[in-house]
Amino acid sequence: MAYFSISIHQWFRQSSRSLPWRKTNNSYKIWLSEIILQQTRVDQGLNYYLKFVENFPTVFDLAEASEDQVLNLWQGLGYYSRARNLHFTAKLIVDQYDGVFPTAYKDVLSLKGVGVYTAAAICSFASNLPYAVVDGNVYRVLARYFAVDTPIDSTIGKKVFQDLADELLDREQPGNHNQALMELGALVCTPKSPDCENCPVALMCQSRKEGTQLSFPIKTKKIKVRKRYLHFFVFCVKDKVVLLKRDENDIWKGLYQFPLIETDSEILSGDEVQNRFGDITAITDITLKHQLTHQTLFATFHRVFVDEYQTLKGEILVKNIDLIDYGMPQLLIRYMEDRDIFTL
Image (tube, rainbow, N blue to C red; front, side):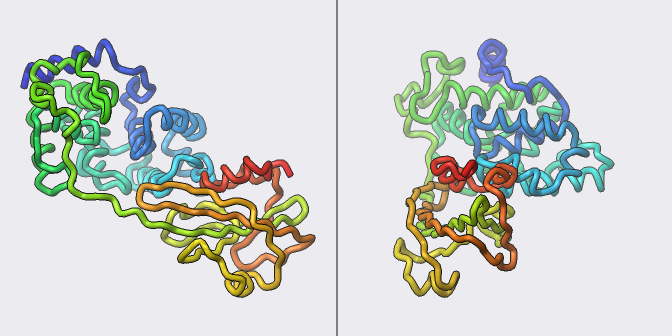
């Protein structure tokens, strides 16, 4: 075990990336980075982290912001529940902890949007507390190093890998140890093309000895992908368009969108349009495919040009040049940029 820890520490000092959240022990900024990096690559999350720190340098600033401001800044990052949880938790920290980020593991774990991995990361990185992190990178490194054939997505597997991580943890430098292990998975022990020649623990890696690196980690569950057919109606009212905020407990909650009809197939009937909007002349524009983790979206955009529009409940008229101020799903941003709707 000492060989493993010493080896990854030495490698980390020489080969790790220079990232801003690694240069601070500020719990707020570390928490911010961890929430942003959930389900997000570092190269994508970095700019969002910098934007959030610039706009909300303290937890007080984030707590005082409106949800629209937070969602607009998060725009394009996906998994918007993270942004809502971030905002909710900032207000809770201000109200219940007087703006001082909690340091005890049980208190950090109790925060909305924080799970076992994130709590361990925050506590070890910010306060050097001895909690081992187990994320996707760690699962992969440990599964290959020990050739563990227990599925990582099983209840038993989660316990097996957490126990392994706990046993390996350098309790004098838990923060550095966790960072090194995660970085090893991100840069060297990658999913499809592991760089075994430059791996600091290759000598003792069981799967490398057996030539079975790509067989690990093992998963049992297959993701079921649901198809959804969305028909967006872009009402162009001179230099304005119609928007409404999504408030149902679904994807993109809290973001703005065009009026929508969702169907069970790609076919949209005239009766459905009539029942929703009355007599309108719509021009079908384009269909875009958008892949989410568990859903495949087929979004068809229909243009409707009118001189005036009577907004319904929840709808607003927004000038094209002001659309940039409204948090919208990346799918709609793609469409508007392609059609120059921001500047029409």
